Length: 223
Image (tube, rainbow, N blue to C red; front, top):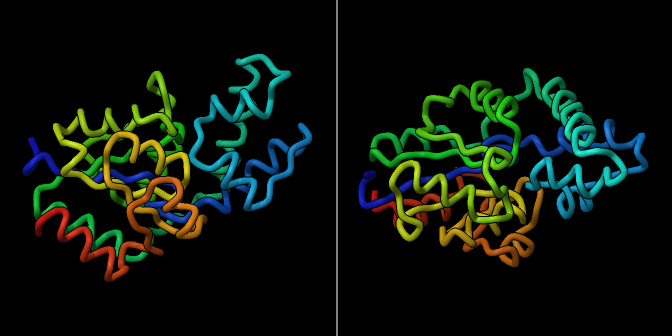
């Protein structure tokens, strides 16, 4: 059991590293031939934070489930090519992870991204070993925005929702974490403050070096 049931739970894309523009580019490249074009606003409303199965169902309804998976799989391959060599942590992230390690507070990565993407990003950041658990939404019965991924993250490290914090950049992710009962911080890589608060975030910040955020985390984690 972690100290007092505490844990820090993080989404990956757009939260640990700012990759959303590359996902948008990959979606347009792969889904464009199927009649879809996405701008930033449509991306944040309809794609960001949703599971690949859900995206396939909505945007490729005339394809078989197998073909949907194959097409979205091509999008993920395209993204991995685009992001290679361009993986950088958000400001303040490394210092926060180091502080949590010193306090013996477990960290969990919770994502709807496929496992190869998640592992590539964590490895590219050099922080794969910092996370006790990597929860993949598509490997569960329900992905985000359902609370199941975050509930699984809590369960895996023996943490409680009331004592933990989550960090998310999408409406879908904020709904998932907050529905699991976890106070959720919105990281403003793609969405604005008002959108995140409306989705259920308790506060927002541009990155992990925000003084107000650091004070909030310190008070919640009691360090």
